[in-house]
Amino acid sequence: MRRNTFVQTLAATALLSSLTGFAQAQAPVDLQFYYPVAVGGPIAKTIDGFAEGFMKENPGIKVTPIYAGTYQETIVKALTAHKSGTPPVTSVLLSTDMFTLIDEDAIVPFDNFAKTPEDKAWMASFYKAFMANSQTGGKTWGIPFQRSTVVMYWNKELFKEAGLDPNKAPTTWAELKDAATKLTKKDASGKTTQFGVQIPSSGFPYWLFQTLTTPNDAILANDAGTQVKFDDPK
Image 1: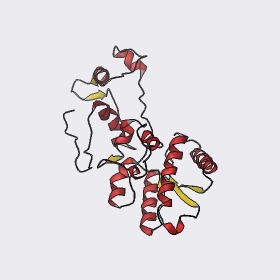
Image 2: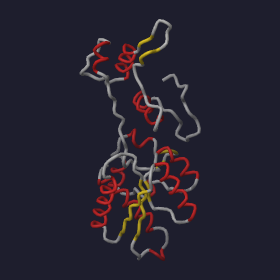
Image 3: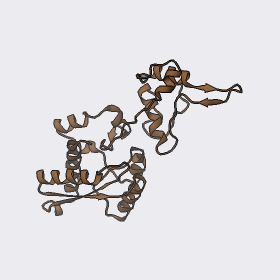
Image 4: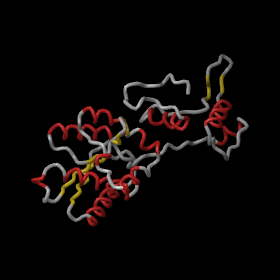
């Protein structure tokens, strides 16, 4: 997570809050911020620190970070609050929730508020792959915040047995395919006894699968979220 990202995101949502009505224009802006925790570590302490730093730089804005549970629990709480008329101004949610949030009219695109050259440069500073699954219809509906990176582990002993360099992991699509083929073992009946690559099917399998497809320019769904491409030859 980058502090600047947090500050810029809150600045955009603060602007959104200030535009909700002229009657409240002079009142201090009070932002409720929902966030989940899906990994270990002092996440709450880190988030609180970001909020405190932002409030010092922006004394007219109060930020209240609210721990909302897991990602699944957070989206439920955010939508419930939205339907009750008391939504948080911003939330950390899964990018896969984007179409649900749009359909529920629960979010607005960040493009509405990124007007200055500085704002636009900030929007363009993120990795394209991180932005792609938060964009649809030519608009950006989410900003990368606590984006995780999939890590690959390899068994050096098995690499040695397969005649591969145990100190070098595959770095390209072709190298991964070659290594996986050499590492795969089958018995006399043709049954696979050792798979060359294993991708967990628990947790977020779609996200894990994307680490193999997106770098190969194979996109799993269209921008509108109405068609999947699992049979794409890529």
